[in-house]
Amino acid sequence: MKYHKIDRNLFIDNRKRFAKNLKPNSLAIFNSNDIYPISADSTMPFNQHRDIFYLTGVDQEESVLVIFPDAHDPKHREILFLKETSELIAIWEGEKLTKEAAFETAGIKTVFWLDQMESIMKVLMSQAENVYLNTNEHTRANTEVETREDRFIKTFKAKYPAHTYQKSAPIMHQIRAIKNPIEIELMQNACNITDKGFRRILSFIKPGVMEYEIEAELMHEFLRNRSKGWAYTPIIASGRNACVLHYIENNQECKNGDVILMDFGAEYANYASDMTRCVPVNGRFTERQKAVYNAVLHVKNEAEKMLVEGTMMAEYHKEVGQIMQDQLVQLGLIDQTDIKNQNPDWPAYKKYFMHGTSHFIGLDTHDVGNWREPIKEGMVFTCEPGIYIPDENLGIRIEDDLVVQKSGDPINLMGHIPITVEEIEEIMNA
Image 1 (tube, rainbow, N blue to C red):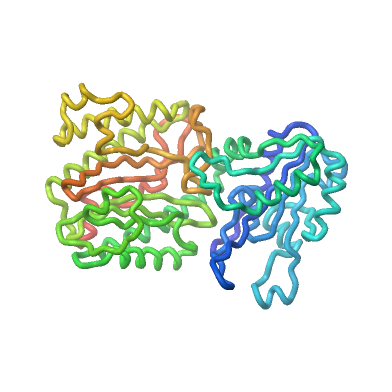
Image 2 (cartoon, rainbow, N blue to C red):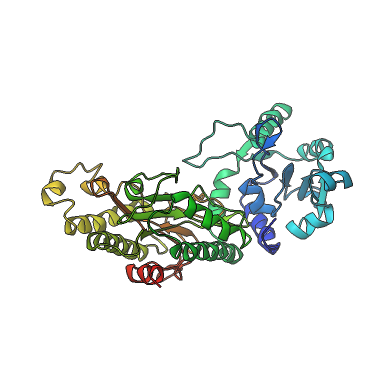
């Protein structure tokens, strides 16, 4: 891994928080991700399942975690099963975790090789009544591809049909939403790398530059700062491309007079950052571009003030919509007649601001969390209002990552990154 070693106390604490939510006499099982094939002997780079990483820090394939707080043998209350390493594997693939290294990483004393799992699970299952299995219950999940976890669940339930099965996902969504200070530090590191990338491209952008050249500059800066790359597919959208919310082709020329919307973030130690900034290709905003930019920035600044403990996200999004409505009226994009005749289910402001303002962020860019409960201290959200005007070839979105506090304004993990018109123009014209 490129990232520095993570304090194992994070994973020890995470397992304790998870175990407290289990029913009596229950065990839970978590699997790593597969290494996905492309074709021939090619594979995609390995990317660990976020839940097993959250609970162990283990960042390799063919790993299984079992948590069984009521196991008769204390050594069986936390077990890590790993792919057995060898000198041959070390030569061809690089070193895998030894049992000693696994303890240093996860703080789990009982480590077995995977070929021992079947016999040990027979012992554990004879004691357990409930089994917690892990499924992807994110509301935006695409579940067409069968994962290693999916295959395991099918075979395991067939092998042990008499047990009662429970879901780990609700527990994971609850505990992952509240970030440990160590997690906040990792996310801050990801944001700092994103900042370095942004400052690098501010002096690089000029008329005639291709969107993918900007993407390349960012990746260079990310890799040289111990990130493995993007937290999500980057958007480098100049001119009218900025009005396509998920534009990812990044293959057009940046032209004089246009504004570039750039939505990107570095990952660090599997933790995401998520930032959007808009800059003028020639280094100077026009008066109209500046007006739209400052309107979006005003909405963002007002929205941030509502990211406090106790806020309901559904109400938050409605209130942000009202603030945006006022700005769109001032910009001449909608008027009182539009507002009077609007569909309550799709207000007039939605013509120019059609997406939500905030989402959970953490190990996943669109992280897990419960949208139906009041937000709490330690949760981390993006804040990303936008205005998109295809007729003007102009799209503006501004986004930062914010940590909810017990009281007062949230902590902005990106507060040091240039954001105002004046800051951006000054750096681009230095």
